[in-house]
Structures are given as structure tokens and as C-alpha cells.
Length: 98
Image (cartoon, rainbow, N blue to C red; front, side, top):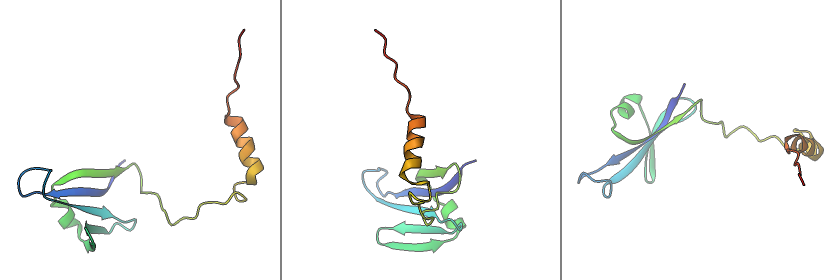
């Protein structure tokens, strides 16, 4: 299943993507939507988002990655020796024919 998590909207006055103004709408992990316009960000309701005529849509196969989660350290992953063993398992054996 795919979830819409952002869109780019082009407000054009001349019927061309070469001029006009681009804004974005993005959803956070708590399903709150935001309107992003140059230096201003404001929270909006879904009703405003669904009324737009998007130029570009962004979907994710699942919820966007939680960037707030810490990345495990080498020690938590088993240290450098464990990483070397994992690399050895993944490295294919090269064969030579003469």
C-alpha cells in the first residue's frame, strides 16, 4: 500500500511551468499536514490539501522513515569483527579459468 506524504503545487498565472510559484504540502508522522511556502510553514487541514491541483506527488510504500530513531553504534551491531564477517559472507568467490 502507498501513502501520500507530500505534494508540490505550481501556482501559475500564465499557463506555463516556466513562471509562477511553487509551494509544497507535507504530512508529518502524526498525520498533520503543512503548507510550505518559501520561508513560511503553517499547519493546514486535509480539506485544503485535497483541493489542490498538484504538479508532483510523493508516495511511500510505508510510513516515511523515522529520522528521530538513533542509528545503532558499531558496538550494538557486534563491533568491527561482526561487520567483517558479514562482509565476508556477502563477498562472492571469484573463479579463474586458464
